[in-house]
Every structure is written in structure tokens, then in C-alpha cells.
Amino acid sequence: MAYSSGNEEQYEVWLRGPLPDISSYLQPAAHALLQVREDLRKHTENFPDKLLWSEPCGRASIGFHLQHLTGVLDRMLAYDKERPLSKAQFAYLKKEGLSNEKLTTKQLVDSFDEKVEEAVDYFKTLPESILTEKRTVGRKKLPSTVIGLLFHAAEHAQRHFGQLLVTISVLKTDEAK
Image (cartoon, rainbow, N blue to C red):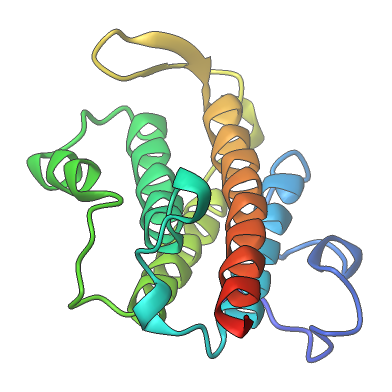
């Protein structure tokens, strides 16, 4: 685990202080990713796998959000390292959201945990001097920066986690009826 103060439930991650060996400029992104990781564990605990691919009101499934959280973070890290997406990353992207009864909620949450750990470890390697260096996104090579990609990864994770929470509450309400 990249960070553990022993009081995870007492304060949100950003209120627990700076993470060691990470630039102060990247602290908010690291805190956001770690917060999503903690909240995801908490809110998916005992989530029934039979509902993983349900799409209430035509909205994205919990399975999609879990896969997408991991996939986007993985892709942003590749772009940040100035790497094109690999065949495996393209294959993962194609499968995001496709029902797969072999996958469990726990497996998908564990995958995100691992990707957050990788991201936080990567943040530790970045000197502040490169944070504004130009980077590009995708085949169209859309413009961004090192810090821009990492902040996007964090805010995107927060956004999808919020959507996932609403979907969980709808599914649990429907199941309780």
C-alpha cells in the first residue's frame, strides 16, 4: 500500500497530510486517486456480482465503471510516459463494459487498486521540472502536459466513481423492492 496512516476512516485522504516523495504539485492528484480507491472498496463491499453488468435506466454498468477506472488510468500513464497504447491496452478498451460473467466485483476493484499503486509509485519518480512538459493524447496527438494527464486521470476517476455510486444505489434500491 502506498500510504497508510492507520486512521483511514477518520479523515479523507487529502486531510491526512502530504504523501512521501511526491511533488506538492501532484499531491492533489495522488490524494484523489487514493480516495477513490478507499471509497471504491467501501462502497462495493458485498456488492452482488449478479448485478455487476446491470444497466439501470440504460446507464453504464458497475462493471463498465470499474473497468473504465482502471483502463483510463492505465492509458493516461502510458501517454504521460510518451508511449503509444499497446495492443493489450486497445484490447482492454474494446472490452470495457462488455458483460463478462467470469469477472467479479472484487477482481475489478483489485485491478484498480493495483493501477492506483502503480500511479502513485510513478508520481514519486517525477521531478517538478518536467510537470509542464508537453505530452500528447491518442492517435490524433491532442495536446496536454505531464501534469495535465495526471490530473485528468484523477478527476476522471472521481467522476466515474460518482456515477458508480449512483448506479449502486439504484441497483440496491431496485433489488430491495
